[in-house]
Image (cartoon, rainbow, N blue to C red; front, side, top):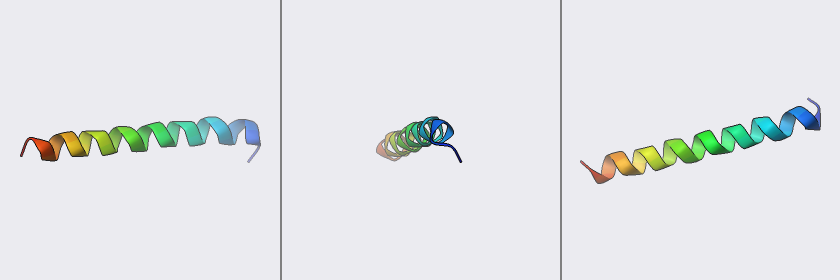
Amino acid sequence: MPAALLIPVLTAAGLAGFWLFYKSVDFFDHL
């Protein structure tokens, strides 16, 4: 995979992972 494709893919994966982590923390905080 070319680096030009790898960078946005990693960025998107990082943002998605951070968003899911934030949502799970927010969810458990309201249990």
